[in-house]
Length: 150
Image (cartoon, rainbow, N blue to C red):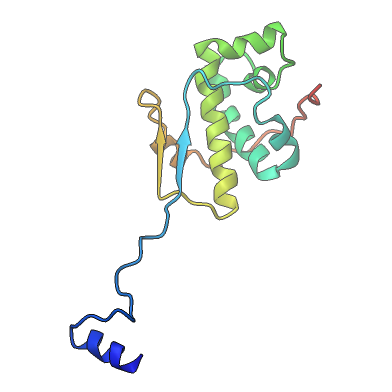
């Protein structure tokens, strides 16, 4: 073994020692899907179980509320098959709901120490910068409890 190491050290090669480079460590990436991926009740269980997720979602929804004519949380967590749930499939509700859900998931992962080396989204959404900026800049409203899944 020592002879093999000496051979390698002087620039030679040996069948007893393997040389090379290791592959770089895998990198984490976040992918945030766009319209068409929305589902009624998406995030409701996380909202009930994860305070960090709930606080982040509440914060984003507070920022979006003045720009919407309906309470988005009620639409996101509506009972499937109801008129309110159907609104989630209208672009005016779909886009902000997906954005709010993505920010809340991003914040939950960040809280748990999972940080992306990169992130991606649908080309039309352009969420990368707002995702990083969507932080607690206004007080979150009192916690709301979504209906239990049936």
